[in-house]
Length: 140
Image (cartoon, rainbow, N blue to C red):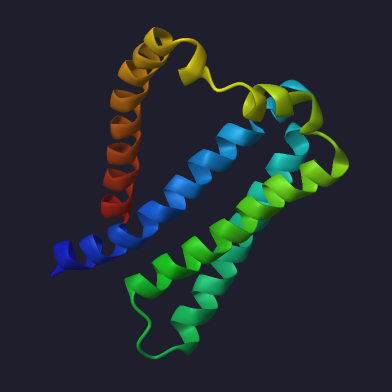
């Protein structure tokens, strides 16, 4: 029964981890430029919002399940990701990185380098997913 609950939860929450990974990839340059406080504020806000909303839903909704918690995490994660990208874009913080992020596609210029990158990224990504999954299962 626990494995089925974890399976249903993981099927949904993996989308949250995907959104979070893409967003962090886009905003990693802000740490270099001195805007790390912004991301810390967004992270703290979204985590606090998740805890409050999940606690309220679990306390008030009679049939709340782990799947409900997963949907709440995904929804708040998407809102946080949008804030993490749109606010810096409006402030002009992305402008110095735009050409490198969008204007140059590495696959078109150096296929061999891209393959090497994939060889390094895929095992690390699988390890990260397993690490987070293991932590989520241990929390149950």
